[in-house]
Amino acid sequence: MTPVDPAQTPFRRTDADWWRDAVFYQVYIRSFADGNGDGVGDLAGIRAHLPHLAALGVDALWITPFYPSPMADHGYDVADPRDVEPVFGDLAEFDALLAEAHALGIRVTVDLVPNHSSHQHEWFEAALAAGPGSPERARYLFRDGRGPDGAEPPNNWPSVFGGPAWTRVPDGQWYLHIFAPEQPDLDFTNPEVLADLETTMRFWLDRGVDGFRIDVAHGMAKPEGLPDMEPMEDTGLLDDHGPGDHRFDNDGVHEVHRRIRAVLDEYPGTMAVGEVWVSDDDRLAQYLRPDELQLAFNFKLLTADWDVDELRDAVVHSLATVAGTPAPACWVLSNHDRPRHVTRYGGGEVGTRRARAAALLQLALPGAAYLYNGDELGMPDVDLPDEALQDPIWERSGHTERGRDACRIPVPWSGTAPSYGFSSRAETWLPMPEGWGPLTAAAQEDDPGSVLSLYRAALALRRTSPAFAGEGLDWVPAPDGCLAFRRPGGLVCLLNLSGAPVPLPEGRVLLASADTADGLLPDDAAVWLHA
Ligand code: GLC
Image (tube, rainbow, N blue to C red; front, side, top):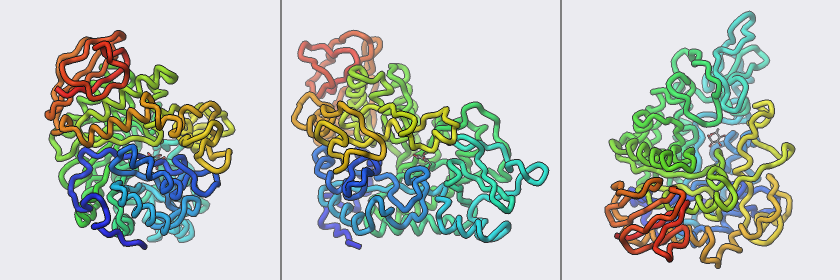
């Protein structure tokens, strides 16, 4: 292991709250860049593109799971949380990446997947071998079935990916998997399970990582007795179904977060952000209490349509959530589980125009922001043919849900034909479309009107301009169909969804997502001013 020398990094490793206004960049590792020519992204690919990330101006990375995995859920089925999947590299490659990122002033956070393991984790293999009632089974949620011969699942819970959340093993018992059958849920009432999570955290923290993104952070606790949940039509796809859904947001989960936080507190300057699909402001705020998570993703902006009321509501609720907590808000427009915002906002030129405006909204808001790889290029979703689909959702839904592959297409770097510099080979794990030459980072680099140039300018301003000082915001009057707010440092952000151009407010224009030369802000555009 390469020890990280704090004196070598251009930031202080112990700065306690660097994350409060940081811009994080989500690397979906399979799709970011392929360093070894197998058509799948990897750690070497990330290393090779660190200069792009430094020039973009991000503060930190979140790298999605790169641990040994049979890839039933593309890495979110972890067979060994303390090693590197050979497809992605090895520990030495990870250490080199970490050191190089730190040398460029970029912090590195990694995914922690506590709720479940892979069915190929040695614990689950031991649980199957050991049989009912064994301590090996007690690390997971094995139960006897209901009905004659226990042939019915122990309760009515559905899997998020379709079908029942239970699978029967040859000796007749059933095990719980909120996600795919290859992702058995761990039992967090078992002290061994929590102790092992701490060991995993320390393993990566000791190597020098700066924090974690916590997968399904509202999932680890299950209610006593595993009672039936309220039957619901839509039970899946990473949404919040409220208190009748017993699979998530049980109070016991907070004890797990307190333990996670206690470990982080031993490593000054580290943090965790939770994937918490809980839409009630007060319940979500509980995850942000002083001894729990530092950040929780704001999924209201991620799920909002291009609608002025929805966008305003997303901001208002997210700020209300954090108001009584020590946490800042944490804004996200896209990730590897949801349609990309270019597509969500209508796709094509319209979608891109709106995505440019949304970027200025996201980056003007007080708090932390997460970009998803390709956001900075204006990447859209890609409709794939049936035979190319890989997400387990496609099979498990009986081919009724296409799943999340459309937002996971590899990033185009250069050139005019697939794989656009993503890999040394043309075929990639998800196919890349024709016609993406203009979307590549290389094509956008020197074009001042490109999405990439907009992001670079926005991140540079955010980092250097005094207009961004202070954490709060005040709404200011704006024409119908527009949103406008002012930050304490003097930043004014105006977003126009009114259908017509509107006059620019007072102030010096810092940056705009569209041309404002005539003193007007066009429809579907946003502007930053210093007033
Ligand atoms: C999270 C991840 C998602 C994964 C699921 C199960 O929601 O973001 O990609 O499928 O957890 O681990």
